[in-house]
Image (cartoon, rainbow, N blue to C red; front, side):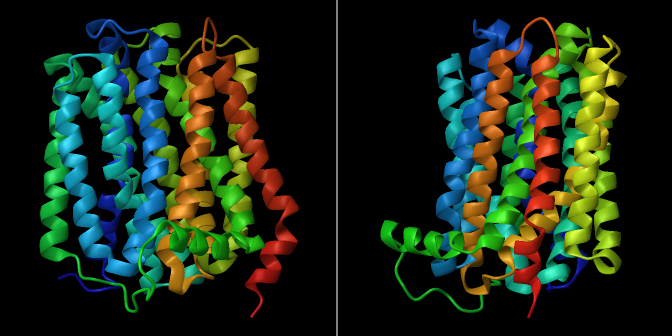
Length: 399
C-alpha cells in the first residue's frame, strides 16, 4: 500500500482524476467521423459530450456521501467497474442513441475518480497544503488533455473511433487493479448516519450554508465552464472552419493544453509564498486575458489555428491556478464532510461546464464567435467573482 505524503500516492490520485479528461478529450478528433458513420447530425454528436458532462455531474452527487459512510476504497472500486462496463457498450454502439445512453452511464462511473481523489486529499491535508497537493495532481493530470487528443487522432486515423473506447476500457481495468492493490483506506472516522436521500440532502445543506464555500464554488464553476466551451467547440471550429485533419487537431489541442500544465506547475510553486487566495487572483487575470485574446482573434478575422490555440493556452494556464486552489478553499472547512463537499462542488462545476458546452455546441455555425464569447465571458466572470468575494473568503480564512 502507498503511504500518504509520497509522490507515488499523488501520481495515483492524478491518474484517477485523469479518467475524466481522457474520456472527454481522447474521442474529440473522432466527432465528425462518428457523425458520418452513425448517420447523426452535429448537434446529436455534440449530445454525446453534453450527456457525458451531465452524467458526470449527477454521479458526483452520490459518491461523496456514500464514501463518507462506507470508505473511499470500496466505493472507488465500484465506480471504476461501472465505468469499464459502460465503455465496452460505447465501443460496440450501433446507433447514436445507443452511444448517447452509454456515455451517460460511462460518466456516472467515471465521476467517482475525481470526487474520491479530492476527498482523499482532504482526508490527508488541509488549507494551502491541500492546495499544493491538488496543484501537483493537476500538473500530473494535465498530461491527459495533452496526450489524449494526439493519441485519439492517431487511433482515429489508423483504426477508427471504436478503437478509442476499447483503449479506455483498458485504462479502466488498469485503474481497478491499481486501486485494489495499492490504495489504502484514508477515511479516519466514518459518518455515523446511514446513507439515504435525506442524510445526503442534510450534508449538502450544511456545506452550502457556508458563504466561503459558495464563493470558491463560483470561482471553480465559472472557470471550468470556459474549459468546456472550448472542449465542446474546438473540434468543429478547428477541423470544419480552419481545415485541420483529425491528427493535426489532436496536436493543436494538445499544444493548447500545455497551458494548463504550466499553470498547475506555477500554482504549486506559488502556493507557499503567495497563498491560496493570491494564486486564484493571478489565475483569474490569466483567464480574463485569454478570453479577451480570443475575442480579438475572431474580431480581426484571423483564420490560423494558432489564433485560437494561443488564447486558450493562456486561459488554461489560469485554470491550472484557479481550479486546484478553489477546490482546496472549498473543502478545507469540512474535514468531517469532505466527500459531501467534494460531491457538491463537482456537481455544480460539471453542470456549469455541461450547460456552457451545450450552448456553444448548439450555436456554432459559420464562425467561431459562440466559442470566443463563451470563453471570454467565463474568464471575466471568474475574475469578477474573485474581486467581489474577497471579504467573504478573507473572513473564513481567519482563525
